[in-house]
Image (cartoon, rainbow, N blue to C red):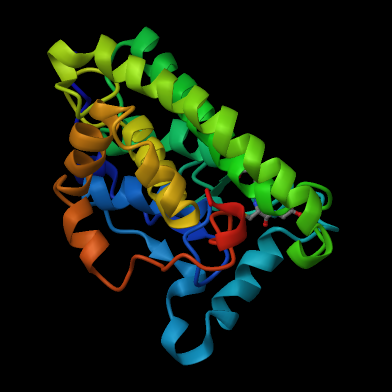
Length: 272
Ligand SMILES: N[C@@H](CCC(=O)N[C@@H](CS)C(=O)NCC(=O)O)C(=O)O
């Protein structure tokens, strides 16, 4: 089943990503989708990053996620947290559409950017894999914030060590085994490079970003497991890096560096 063609020539909407400046975070899943499709987008908080550390753009992100909002002038309901995507003219009445939740944004962008197959069952499968990969991302976040999201890592280090140990020892192998089996099951079409069909989907991009983030956060653990999941390590991960659009993006200064986001490198939480 082939992926649908991007709609960019037909509609050319001005996609605007609203996310925290300076980190990959959940916004990265949205950036990778645009970059792979070769479709331009406005990354509001990162736009003037070298000059203002993203503060001007970030004000816009905070305004969209205003905790007192009950909705906007275009009839969009309140947004809980970034990433959000704004698309002028995308509502039926011509108004601006504003959506949030990473997998929901990808569900919207998949057909727009040609990053899903035509078949409905396969589209559901792409979304299913995306939700599963994002579960891993959430669990990776919880290794450094196992007790309280709004408190410092330094105030929950003992619990973080327990959480990270369990994550490394039981959760990483469980999820990696699953994605390895998905690649194996699709090997005749995807050749180990794609999770679904013989073309890139947004599920590939999300899972790739999660593997990449884990390589940053837990380099020793990930290195130690490299022989256990041959398709992920030798076909899928390097293959996606070479995808058109992705290769150029990763080499560009648009790709934010890992820091104090979802994927953090605390050596004491890695395999010893
Ligand atoms: N499930 C949501 C999670 C959104 C989320 O947690 N965003 C973070 C930034 S990566 C945030 O700013 N959260 C604010 C909060 O939870 O208070 C998604 O995938 O979009």
